[in-house]
Image 1 (cartoon, one colour):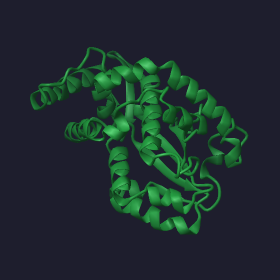
Image 2 (image 1 turned 180 degrees about the vertical axis):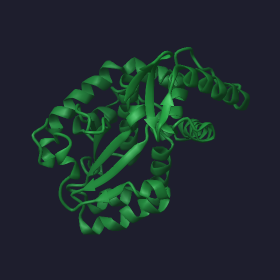
Image 3 (image 1 turned 90 degrees about the vertical axis):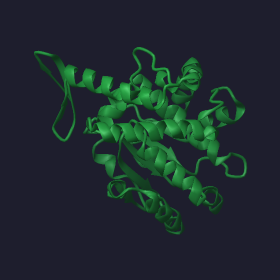
Image 4 (image 1 turned 30 degrees about the vertical axis):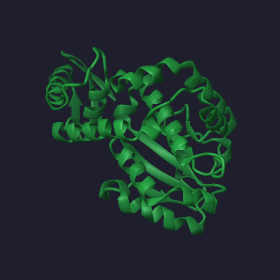
Length: 277
């Protein structure tokens, strides 16, 4: 939400915190100085919005923003299986884009939050690596933030569609893999506001309990589990496969595959320097 003052537009980032031009400028400068003291090897291009995104996500709590930003940077360097070789035209990435494992909806929900559908069982666990699935998830999420910075203000609602999940899918999600996934979600510059697991078979509860064991108390409060459909049907037009009248998974997959391919240069730049986000 934006309002206007004598200083220009004001962005409301939550809990009554107003992002004025002055607060934005001084806070970015403070975090930048700290970061370059800690990591003099970093290059922060003019116009980079990454620090701004973390400030918004943490409601301008400087200490929290610094901590999350440093964890984010460390993860990008450590988790090469997710954040390197992100050429959209690599065959394994093309296959997962065709399948549609991570699908942002075009419409925001009633609170202007970005809704994404994560199809946890769409891929073949005998053919596709879970690391590649997470790689494609992060590729689309990064592009989403790059194209629409309001995601850093209003956050993300994730619908995990578990339709068709098998033991093979569950076995791919080792505790170490789950821990990495949860830590990444909690330290990304777009706050997860709701994690809704739908079409959940009873036997998957064990895996979901492992997920929750690695979550912060605040994130655990944002998890809902349903054996049937989504509770968001009243606030957004859901895809056909979730009982709505919106675009099908196939149509969304086609759209995001094209978007990712059209922005291949964005991934090259980010691989050179994550501050190109």
